[in-house]
Length: 458
Ligand SMILES: Nc1ncnc2c1ncn2[C@@H]1O[C@H](COP(=O)(O)OP(=O)(O)OP(=O)(O)O)[C@@H](O)[C@H]1O
Ligand SMILES: [Mg+2]
Image (spheres, rainbow, N blue to C red):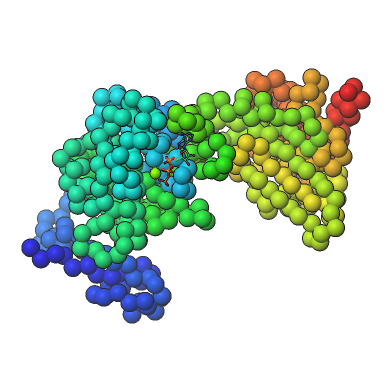
């Protein structure tokens, strides 16, 4: 049988050429031609084929499907309650972050619960996969593994085995027969994902595609897959630190705001069910430290924000951040200078979220501002009993404190750890334990006495 011939389709204008060239003959764009295989189904369908009839959604038969619980609670939560049969999940993460470990644990648990599972490894030999599984324990050793890079072979095994859940590690190592692009190229990756999706939907198997991430944080190559798959998860963290966070960038079956927190240990990834306890326990009562009551998805999370202010001769002075957005710090510094805080034009400012966590929310403005003011004055923010100060709130450009989502849950979380009162913006309703302040100026003058008392007592 003659192999279907690839064509080279421009990603900008859709022009199809028979041979690759650096510049699209259609629109003149450079490097936009991607090798594409014709879809057999579409070629076979003639104009005379019977048209499908649309049906009202209420009449569509949709059997209630049970989600597959991976047994890794944080992963299940980020997925929106487990894997959906027949869905395609893309798991991205930088090298060595623990993607294979996470998926290996999930498959191990699913296998132990009596589901058919399959682990396809394109990067590592079965022996290497076994070494990791030995570290993860008995359940992971029971997972059937296949070391294969040929897409056709993987599809055949999927059809034959019909696993309930399958992991392809990684999608960039698969090579489709008859396509000339190197594994990992846009054409190959898209072909592999589309073919796997077609089979997975047909046999109702949930597939997790593992993908690498580039330095810029984009899922490399598989960026083109993001709209194809049902769910895109990003596994992040700094390799030198043990904390890892799992976030959903896209989820057709759940919220994208959920975050799972893990810690890498010798026995594999351990879920950190109560990250607040961990981070508050590490908080100090030194000047420049305070606790942010953040919301990570539906879960409140307490993290320590630290600031250091050091005089400098350098112009412009340094602004270094770790775990928060640098532009956000610039904005907070500007507001501080205008509205009741110090002017730090001749000082280096360092702000860091302890534990290597990243917070991406406006509620961090107030803790950042107060930590900087405290570091500048050399006065701790800690209150009675040396308990750190907990706060949250967005700082507006005119110095006002603005409402942020879920104030009651943030306050509740802080109270749980004995951090009271909590400083925050007016909530519109009475919240037990919240000290509402209207502006940054008011917040700064309110905490000024707090540290002084502690200092005097010491
Ligand atoms: N015995 C051990 N104790 C603690 N951590 C370990 C141990 N062995 C491996 N690790 C950690 O596991 C990480 C590797 O995990 P894993 O192979 O799952 O990553 P990955 O994201 O799949 O990497 P790649 O992109 O190379 O496939 C290492 O970076 C290391 O931090
Ligand atoms: Mg791996």
